[in-house]
Amino acid sequence: MKALAFDLGAGSGRAIVGEWTKDDRLVLTETHRFANEPVRAGRRLHWDILRLYHEVKLGLAASARAADGPIDSIGIDSWAVDFGLLDRNGDLLGNPVHYRDSRTDGLMEAAWQIVPKEEMFSRTGLQFLPFNTLYQLWAMKREKSPLLEAADKLLMIPDLLRYFLTGQTFGEYTNASTTQFLNASTRRWDTELLERFGLPSGILPEVAQPATVIGTLRASVREELGIPGIPVVAVGEHDTASAVAGVPAADGKPFAYLICGTWSLLGTETAVPVLGADAMRFNFTNEGGLGGTYRLLKNIMGLWLIQECKRLWDRQGVRRSYGEWAELAAREKPFLAFVDPDDDSFLAPAGMPAAIRAFCRKTGQPEPETEAQVMRVVTDSLALKARYVLERLERLTGIAYGGLHMVGGGIQNEALCQSTANAIGRPVWAGPVEASAIGNLAAQFMANGRLSDLAEARRWIAASIDIREYEPQNKNEWEDAYGRFVRYVV
Ligand SMILES: C[C@H](O)[C@H](O)[C@@H](O)C(=O)CO
Image (cartoon, rainbow, N blue to C red; front, side, top):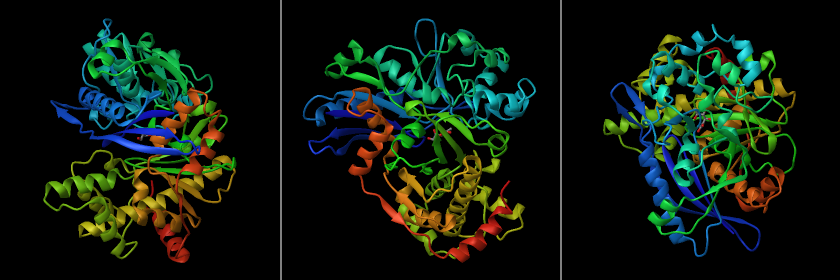
């Protein structure tokens, strides 16, 4: 049996075929990889959605060619919060706007004048991030956007790509839970909350649960690509939801994870949403998961800081791979200075290295001079922020986690994995890299009945992949560093 997963991140996308082998293991074959390059046009930063859809079709054709035998299903996951609008004829109304666009600046605080922060959290259970879908829609309303006025349907990024493939409009639950207008307890759209902002709830699609078959390729796609019909499954379409499903926590005990990519997401899995005052004060979120679970986690700005430094230095001709930057940073003296990766100044700065130096200057710390020193400051700070968030997670759940599962592309930075183990003073279990794609595939095998539930999926994943363990080192130095770090955190 074979399934095809499309995993679209903020920087790149992949098509990966997952085969369930005769000896009950999962074997992955990457059939297509493509860049995801946002486009600034006029005053807006956009996703190039038609380009991404074109790449999905290329991936589909390449996978059909590569797979000797039929592909049994398809699933799509991507980053969260962003969306496209369809008009009443089902045509796309413009390219989706990127969550790092400035249109939502200052709106979150203004929104609390309409629905108080406490009430919004108790209803949606969602962390307060300035780009949540609610504030993006409200920005369009405030600007009297003709697109919003003409809108008949709101579809999030995977919903939209799936609509292009199947012709059906559903809103997948895990991604819908990142909008800040889905009620965490009822798991339904919170239309009353939306209407208090004067926003049209009629454009919201029917919510589909993950791990369900919800369509097949439309005739025009089959003809264009010369392939047969393939069932399309609603997987955990929020890539973070798929990554959590892909965490090889196979012993059924409570576990903590750190999903490491453009964003770092640190959290755990719960049966009920945690909506208390501490969860709101620590700005944790309760995003929807597979199998009726919740993802109690917190966003950390993650490798975005490293990606943006590299992007600027590449442009300046200082070209090095991520691996080379990680090695150079690892050779630098540790703990020169610390930044809070979640400081607002890092969300979309014109120049990330300058923003990092400015943070150090603002907090009276020495400024990193060389590129390698900048990378070291970021890596040390990400590791220490993981400890800061893990300790708050444990205060919310009352559970002391024996270690931390690290998954995602970022675990290829071995120094970061080791630093994280050092910072938390507990083991890190690193793997898999392709956690989102693997969780996407697992949901497809749940939809076709090959896997019964998440627990079975995680045992199957654990039996199919290699996990590398990092034991904590230099505990005293990192303990001292943590004391210094918390002084600079918001
Ligand atoms: C906004 C981010 O996309 C979102 O919070 C994060 O969970 C994600 O989707 C990472 O890919």
